[in-house]
Length: 258
Image (cartoon, rainbow, N blue to C red; front, side, top):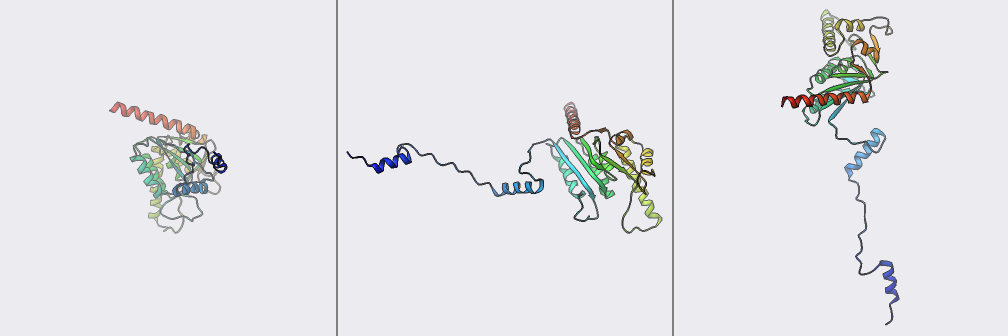
């Protein structure tokens, strides 16, 4: 029987007719939301991938100037206190969060807003460790001491000076009395949450000669520890290690209570 050459050629090209053909593997297109996340990451961080980690530690960053009642210009790097408040409330309520790490690199800002943030951090029932990176100036000082334990980088600085006001101020005795009482609130808070005394802090705050044409003191790294403002000189590794120790201590105390 003559063999159909065309048929043999078709079998060679397509394979055995009795064998099942395997479906071609096609890559599923990336969902639109995933594409958007990748593009946002590239735009904001300059990289395509950020390490993902389910952590029991919440990191709260306070960067730039603390913005309070007055909106700052758009070119200013700011931390808006109304954005931090719901984050702190959520961290307190979330049962998966066992500790909070507060990172500071701030020049200060609104006095009442900064003090409000410090009071909220201090009132958290979960362990809190603060770390000053770069700077924790002015109203950043109360925030830096508001945790259970505080660290400062070796080269980081903290500027201590009296409360200042900008803009139109009514020059009457009541205004100065209000400023004096506001200053007392800040000093009392810092003394309660650190090892420095009110007298020593006021001495640093009102010292002349260190800051050009001004009064106040600029303390760097180990000096902040020497004065009792900060507990220890260290970076991120030490801060996380200490926070994990405090978390483990809180777990053990909870087991004893139960």
